Length: 390
Image (cartoon, rainbow, N blue to C red; front, side, top):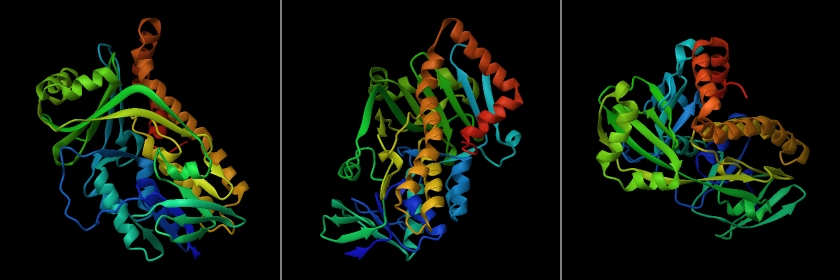
């Protein structure tokens, strides 16, 4: 039985970020187990029109800066300096600007593979982080000190704290006996990258329509990321439509601000299935990342919420004498509950709210106008969106 220190199962963005946060806060040893071969962080990388991306809020960028990754990440990221929110067919908009909030950027957008490459490079540079890949957890045994894990390779590891970070369909979470609710929303998201006639100049757009939401996020190389979410049938129709049909729809919503779309990459469709674990902490183990909760892509808060979870966890356990202590882990779970609930509720109900017609619809539009004109409420809204308050 080999001592693993902190044992993280799952080498995606959540698992890798937590390993680095734990080390930065003084953890002596971290072991990370990933089911697939991890890519070489030194392999060539070039921008793509078919790559998924993540919008990192200012608070997330602060956390990554703390562990020394921000400067490298920003070399292939586009700053978000303005957020523009509107409703199709209605007057009123809300604009949030970085300079009015006293920050250099509201957030930044980068391709997932670039974020992953930087995280993996940092893992490889730390001799106290042991990465085992590809391998999987075959069985778990609870001990007075934490858990013993037997991997499919036969390797046996002991840990004082087991961290489950292997995705929404987590097999390790199941082995702990923690159930999860999976809710098919009946909606899908369509994502693609494109280039517009008018440069984006760091502006992110969120446009609410009768069917759903279409967001445009600034990217490097003059590209913009398109994230279109709505009822499954409507999104499936857009996925199979001729490229010019989809471009015409985008120009209908954004032509007045961005002109024509010169190019649009091949779209990819993803079902919106919301996952929530019934518990995120048990004696000796915690569940984080998509294994703990997934969100609607509206407002792009999923990974940003996870990073706040990870920072709070690392603060409590990195140098604790008994990091798997139930009282300690339960305190973390309770401390994170309010932020998780607020973000999940906001993300889930924002689009349905903007579909409302009649008096509620008019009140919503007045709210957009009022938010744009009122510095106080707009500032609070911006700080929450940036992850600087929770």
